[in-house]
Image 1 (cartoon, rainbow, N blue to C red):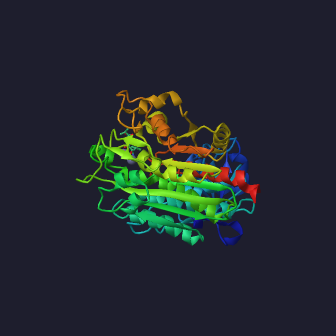
Image 2 (image 1 turned 60 degrees about the vertical axis):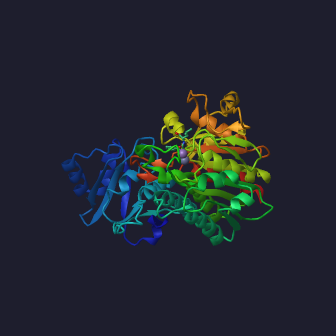
Image 3 (image 1 turned 135 degrees about the vertical axis):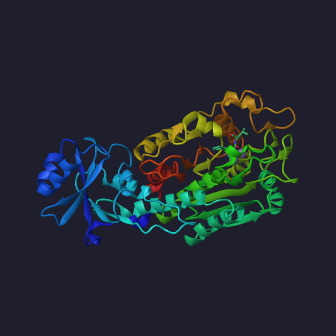
Length: 464
Ligand code: BES
Ligand code: MN
Ligand code: ZN
């Protein structure tokens, strides 16, 4: 995706994309010549927002793409993304009239993404030339991160098992000079990650936990934890087929924190970054954990299992407990944790949870500014009662039978494993785009990480 955007000055021949409104079209056409005007008439082209028309310019030897925008700007975030796959192969550049060239460029590139691991790559390439006012390096780092996230989610579980996911963490960090370790299989028990082991042990592919760090040890500490369930069958509480179809995306939290880590390290942000990813397959076998089991946890809390399909919060509980042993300035976890989050807010608006009001306000503002929508939901303490257990310290799901507040109770469960870190925020993401829209292609999706990259850049920019 990064290669889609180039410096305009590096393109020898490129077709301009000219932003027009229904009001400005007439004036623009005067400048483009009679052939362009005639062609607009023939096509009844009026410059309606998000519509486009390719015209000949001057004496007919030149060309331009007219693209309709609103008076106030693009018709929707990343609207130019709706254009990229409709254009003939070739080189283009953003002419005047785009109010926010950076957003236009990002939309164009985000929509050009294709997952081509299993098919012949498309030879149709459209590049976009950008003026010197846009920071191409930074956008490139963002695009690389989003691509990594989408590729990981789109890769099916037969080719992305716990080992491959952990290896991806290691490779990404080693590429940037970071280091760490992967704790595998039975070692999870001796190293005290009982819940990661319990969830992952039924798979023929051993569970593991990747823990990597990068950056100056004295810099502000940012720790990212991601749910890495490479496939979620539901376990013994087996999901029905229709609910299992998309479950290769259940490592979407891990994929998103890796995309964010890639942005942070490529941009060399002045932070000490740590990424913790528990990697498991929630599978069915005689050795599987069961409803009614009582697990011990890294934190020491005993956990009664209500339903083996609520596996994500278990592996995250141990991973968050580890993260919380060394307090960081900011602890972020991301997970495709509950169907309830999607029911509450739909696939495009992930809820986030934190007790840090200042952080929540910052996220809300930056999410809006970066067109990376997020919505705060409450860590509503009275609902903690839903997690009461008669036989263990805590139950891991709401067994009251009401089914109330599924995303909130999952977040509350996680909060039991974070005691020392002041700024902890949890994202319950969907990780998937069900239908194509500008800036989004069907399949695995980055959610919240462009916002978080901006937030971390802003917060710690002056720290070093
Ligand atoms: N990975 C799922 C959550 C999920 C389902 C996210 C569909 C996005 C789309 C998670 O492990 C799960 O199965 N959660 C259960 C929890 C329930 C058993 C308490 C759920 O949400 O149904
Ligand atoms: Mn599940
Ligand atoms: Zn899951």
